[in-house]
Amino acid sequence: QMVSQGWKFFRENFYYFSHVTKTWYSAEQVCVSKNSHLTSVTSRDEQEFLYKIAGELPTWIGLTKAGSEGKWYWVDDTPFNKDSVRFWLPGEPNNMGSNEHCANIKVPSLQSWNDASCDNKVLFICKRPYVQSEL
Ligand code: 2F8
Ligand code: CA
Image (cartoon, rainbow, N blue to C red; front, side, top):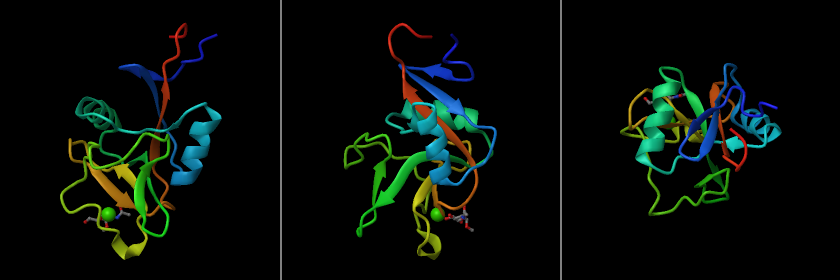
């Protein structure tokens, strides 16, 4: 039934690289409609896989801020804490204009994350776990 059409497999997960631009939340809604979430990034290898496919165009990932303290968290509920890998561009996150609460992969390099306005429309990446029996 080809449930993985259009998805790329990498280390136990499938990834969907959009060809359309969306705000961060609309992108997450698209991912949820596909039984997934905007991608988390939990290793250097995963970050390398993602930025190489994203290329030169800014691409939302599933990192956003919550609460009065504005703490960063992964929308797929992957823990984001002191032990977590992070791949911010030098000088980021800078919360420019006090209105940058969502993260994207901005450039094709290991350190490539930028915080930007969640209302910006850019490409996005969904991620869902591989479940036994599909491929
Ligand atoms: O120089 C870094 C700075 O570049 C842009 O602002 C000029 C980015 N804005 C957007 O991506 C919308 C800032 O987030 C970034 O910090
Ligand atoms: Ca920024």
